[in-house]
Length: 542
Image (cartoon, rainbow, N blue to C red):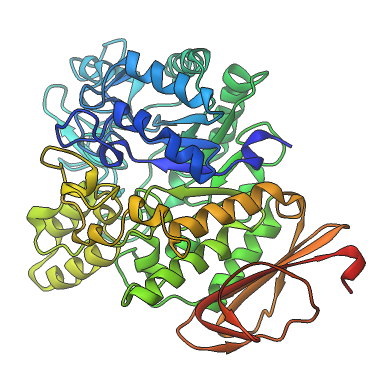
């Protein structure tokens, strides 16, 4: 079995993980100081968010130099030491690869905007305007228009994200050659693979037509999962990954169960992909439209993806999502916070696939109680408020409190000391005030803690062949509150029962077996947010 199937991944957002020099910003030396903690937890691989040189218009996802380390995070020597220390502990490292766009401060773009005949001009996407306006009506994820005007050359450049993040032109073979060479240099350095940011967007409709509708519109068919994308990914695979013991996982924006099998499964493009149906489950037309969690829909999503592709990514959150326990669990009381964080973990991380745990999730970190926009740092949330009308401001603020990305980016809570032990300086973003009772140090010493539960769960996953290799079958499909499933091989059957509600539920087990893990379960009753994991061997099942 490939190593990336056997290991649990841990996502590190370096700016907020651990500050090693007291400047208020997490850094590489801080990460090194916590590697023993990750090993103790049972982590086998780390996805490291961008540490490249960047002006931080989008917190490192706007890269100005793909082969330099951001000074705030340290040096290349620090990075090499991090890689060495991780490998010493048998922890793999995958880096974030952001190649749909670069920073507008990248050398390529600085050259490209000088004049139309510059050799780097075609590294980006430029078009003439129409009647003094944008070339088309495409909308950006971060701004109303996906185009910005450049006065020097009198043309517009495309940016599907911030105007500080111009899209790269993958039609240009010279650009692809540069990107592939850069990837190979990182792999030669010892990196074990990449998480590829919005990689499904790298091919655009080269006619750049207007999207249907009035005003600025976002039509994914014009820039997502286009045929050329498969050509580029296959070329990347053959040029960079073929013959290496590495992995690549794509952030495949606008993926679905129809186009996903075209990208993973046969080893010619990506190994894994992130699917986002679950991240959209409590939204409407946009992510800011809030609605309640729907368990029936959740079951449909899980089953659909477990059947659609051979191996899934398993996650409740990441740096772009709010805190999982605040979003999907119940953080209104200590008891329900503790139970729901554990039960969410059991519901997700024993499914067929590779767990991706976001930093702080394992101790039950919660959303931050923001009081004003001055506390925000995220460009997406700030732009939402900037472009909201007076009547929309209230809805926008409510959306930010529930789903704003800064919720996940507050500093990691290590102990009860000042700033939760994250820094001796002034943190770049405020520490959640609940760190006095939600922190690593306290939870390491308590058997009932969320952290202890995560460690137990990851140990179970690593030791049980049935969890790694077994088939997935949904149980109790019509139950309004319990999410249950089994993982089966010829030798054994492991059943997972999770009460994803605040109601007490009676649980009738079809057969007796060994209880592996239980939380708030006694005498056939699953308490609110309780869970039960059982095992039956072949000789005592049926």
